[in-house]
Length: 208
View (tube, rainbow, N blue to C red):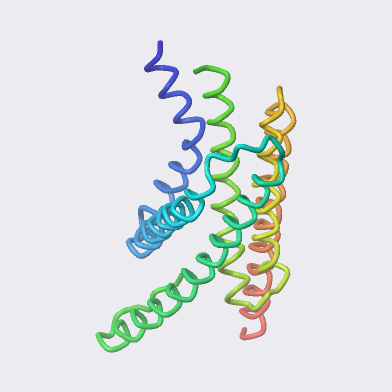
């Protein structure tokens, strides 16, 4: 029963991401490298942040504001790394495109309740970060300030929402809000993709 429950929690948290990986990312080696590099960068950010905050932890205060500062600094640092990853990604893409041109190949385009709660929270954050990366990369590429600011704002709000878990029964409030943020991120990403597709079709129509 414990093993079955553990597998269920894991699939609940990672199932959609695994499906996305198998159906889309696994078919393109360059996307696999991008996912692995972003994962490594994310782990490095956690290691660096844990090293910085080690001097102040554990927090002896029962107030919420020290945790708010921790989340704000963590989100700020991770969003800075997201921009860095974007710049490295574009640089690497340009290098690979130049190499592809030289060799005449196509261009490269782009326990129990607690465990259930943690799985649901993980699923929400995986959804938020997955589509936030799409929004952020497109925002950086197009110079769209709305998309560039949308990602860190959603990240910060989602992080701050987790503070309600310190209250008794806080998950009942926090998890729905997290899924609301995930839904907003998904809707915003959908609108962005629809806008890009419309622009592409419009340009193709003008050429015809």
